[in-house]
Image (cartoon, rainbow, N blue to C red):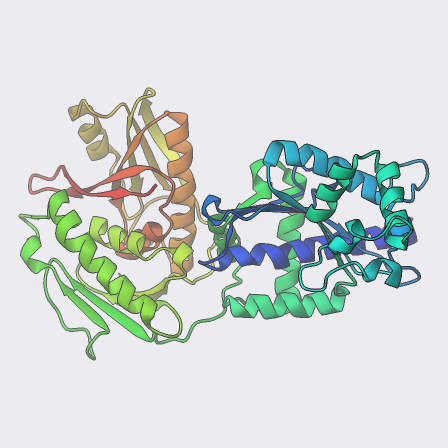
Length: 489
């Protein structure tokens, strides 16, 4: 059994490694693809991997069959592609059947056969090296030519019309003689390095295990967006180590103006819009839309134009909702990372958004209310704020429900012991917000934060696809006032 299963294990490894190689394209901001599926549930024989383009590109969807062979005793020929084995459909019949169904459901598609077996010259002469498509000579050759005989054989075996066969061949891609496992590992390392990821056998094994686990668990876990890919990279600590000192720096002055060292790459003085405690004056949404967000976007364009890592040293005395908005403007999905000076037990630690997330997670400890458009969510880390949150909820008729969550280990000044804890809670908070919104069928999330500024910064980087989020700050009376509205999409 061990010998029999070895080829299967090699085949799975090859499939998952190739899938990871293709999925990495999603990290490119200019990638034409919006998401990928591994083992698509409705793709028939071309289900190993699918790449779905952004609607604006006009590109076809790609459906892959990935085949591994343990040696090179044979190659693909015109005849072997339509040869039935043990009474089963031939490989080409399976791909043709899948193409018929997908063409009807999905519109413009390409069917890809990827294999380490090469093409025999009788087939290879008709595969165009530029894009792996079949040469149109197959359908332009004379009636007595070898090409015409092959075409007629395929048409008969596939039980296709002449028009169907030509359309199928136009959509078929034969990437044969592709890399063996060792060569594919080198290609994967090259692509991971290009996107700033750690390389090597351990990192590839972690990625392959993640692909296999998602296939095993099934459902939407097999659908990979750029956001999901970044979460995998963060969870598995695949980011390459960034230099200790970021190349770019940003100072934002809100509560007060301070100097933090050498002149920064960019500096924003917002002190006229804020007044520190006890008055706690904060800007209204109009000021955010006309002044503050445009200023952040100008800084973002400046940083994007700079060469090198998008690694930002952020400094400033900022309310939690403001630093949340800064993180939101420079998201993880855009490739941005931060270093933040976080006070902790009388010292100042440098927290990095590239830190490996620990196992810390939020736990819902209180919830009240019913389904409705406005959901209040409070995330408490540095202390227990349930009584004041409950009072705020009960005093405001606009909230339909309230969800209160704290770290599983409890709240307190040392609830977070590291930037890894902060990263873990940021990712956990994103999931909690999504689940809570779905559970209460809410249109808007009203968010109250009670925790370190570094956590708010990291959370802001993960906020997307959650709709409108209204943030809150404490007011002069000890209650809460609405702050900045984030349109997360």
